[in-house]
Length: 177
Image: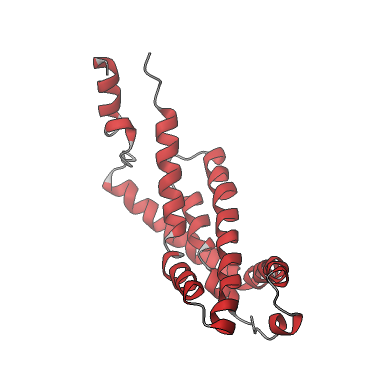
């Protein structure tokens, strides 16, 4: 690595720029956190109105997968999904992080949502589908999937945000000649 490259890497926060240092002051971090909390609160209030529609879309896709897996329409319709959309609230911090992250332009915010929303959607469909073998057949593997998604799903928006932050930082580093 050249001396100039070493200096660039050091300036950007470590080897290959993998440090998530956003170069923010304590005041800016406080503002970021307050903005994140405010956007989360607003979007959570909105979620109570749009979450049921979102759950319907998830159920539409899951239903077709379940039919292909051999579940009957009677088995599928036996599941009560009223209020289930509250379990998919991890879209709330995803949107809040996309909006509140300082220094991100509209393009980066859009990239996060274009990547994150489909990932979370697939996770939500997988979660719903996995409930069926867990309940109908007592599948331990399905139970592991459901519980893992239940616990880990809360972290997924933050993992997406972190990974995108790392990717964008690495992408911003100039190539070594």
